[in-house]
Length: 170
Image 1 (cartoon, rainbow, N blue to C red):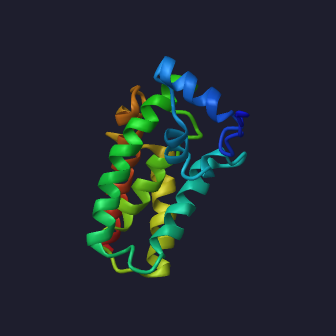
Image 2 (image 1 turned 30 degrees about the vertical axis):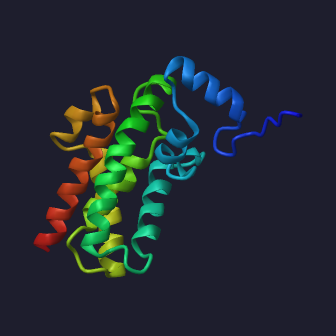
């Protein structure tokens, strides 16, 4: 039987090569890359974090997603999966690779948690979060200097929590 060696649309790597390397080195799998790059948005040549944040907003406006009983489990699930995927991506691509945007996605959802679903509020959350993500107020800056997937996730989670607090107070 002839073996097919299809190319991965996210990385350009062959399935067989990716799986073999991941098994040997513990490197990122296709699923790690899919999750960590936010369905490929992290591969944007311009502002991948912003593009990943926009994906989070699009998902947020899927009917029913803004419900706390949907969002909270999604945040927990993607935080856990993102932490693992980001950890393997960092080992393969260096400290906090820009292609990893699952942290931005989860943080945007945190920014909007427990708030009414309104376009203006979502746009405010997007802008405030992006500004905080750039300036990294404490303790986000602490996590930003650390290695590992948990730190990649936590610096943006802190900014997402700050954004949510600011919007709750407004």
